[in-house]
Length: 363
Image (cartoon, rainbow, N blue to C red; front, side, top):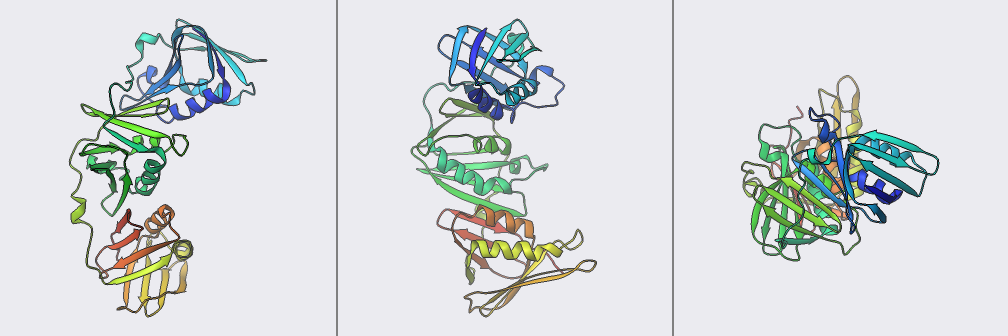
């Protein structure tokens, strides 16, 4: 194999692939990527056996067809540090040579036949969504997935399609986020996509009109966006009945400025500690007070004027969970709905975003 690569295009491809290829694994071949060159195209493949990337590299000139499997980290490092506009990669067997104008590297890899198969995108899509809309929805829910849990279903994001609407739902048991995304076409379905796959989709580059095609194949989901194909195992298990968690009928409602409240939460949280992590929201007539107290550190209070005429309430929340959602709100204002001190709070932004947050006891 011999291929001339535009260094920036190759670097962009490897940037995405390093998000998938594991740095540590008992199988050395999985620390590698496979480069495959034909007369028509060059593709780079990477997988951890759960998520795979099949990447069509742009701006290449194929001088000799072939395949090679090389360590991803070493190749990415060479490409990243190079100052050349064009890099030449030549491979034979398991040996790969990379040449620039003043550099020459030899990397030892594996025979191409040893690399696991990474799926392509065969047939027609079952669902189409703009990349912009999908990434907007992902950014509003991904932070709420469980990081470590024996309940595997909440380690992913629920995809629920009905007509031309896709609901993305995530929860870690203490909070729940839901974002509704408009689709170009779909079939009704209910699946759970791993958080790692969602994060990978969020890294894709594309213009405003770039579309993502989606289809399910057995226990996998496959995405195609431009020249990038992402395949992923689905999460097994039953996602919680999230509709039952969303409160309704709350009468204590406030409309609040997003940036102002984010600043107030962050300031009130400055004097929290490991023992007293919560902040208290005190809602009264035309006022909202954020406060915290840590016996060994001191106390903090931030008072804001708000339009509120309802019953007063004091409720405690984890400030990090409030910060997370306020960063995800894309509108200048949001709605806060409260019930009692021991019931969840609800944050709404526009018609398509909702966040449910369990209160905490602040003593």
